[in-house]
Length: 116
Length: 113
Image (cartoon, rainbow over all chains, first blue to last red; front, side, top):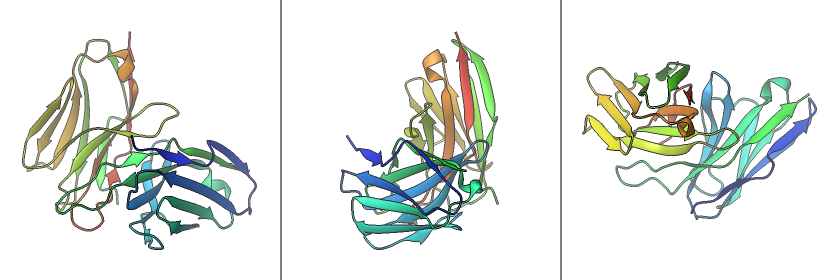
């Protein structure tokens, strides 16, 4: 079974703090994704990575950065947390882009971040 | 620009009834349409998916109906059970590029006993 783990289930930070959210997968998947989930807005893609040290912006990258130094680990960084970044953050992985195919995304349990 | 529109936002169905959730998309490059199911406190998990070369796909009590000309697809849950109470997301992707998913806003389904 694919296992996607996220460093914290709940996190409370103060405005202006630098926040690190970590995601680790154990199935040698190539692609990793960070989403935020807000009520009534669904899942919105922040950043994704298709290889080590590679990253691509998603739909809402402003205020976030990412790091992927190792294949199994993908970090989401809030350089200076703000209250509007209070949200549920979900990490997901896929095996890789198959020829003419789309892979199932496997999600972690999420980190609920509150910025005060 | 919302590329995948999902309705309704919430749905209450009696046990044994049929739950229907609808989605519409705009991007004609989309060629993969999955549905994800999310229980409280969990991440979403793939429920069922369809490609536009077929108009219907059934897995147990769950069926996707797909209308390519109308750019619409829907999830039908037959004989709905209280254990089906969850949030459902439709999504769409193109097999070109990096195959990122564009999600609908979700539907909270409650199946009453």
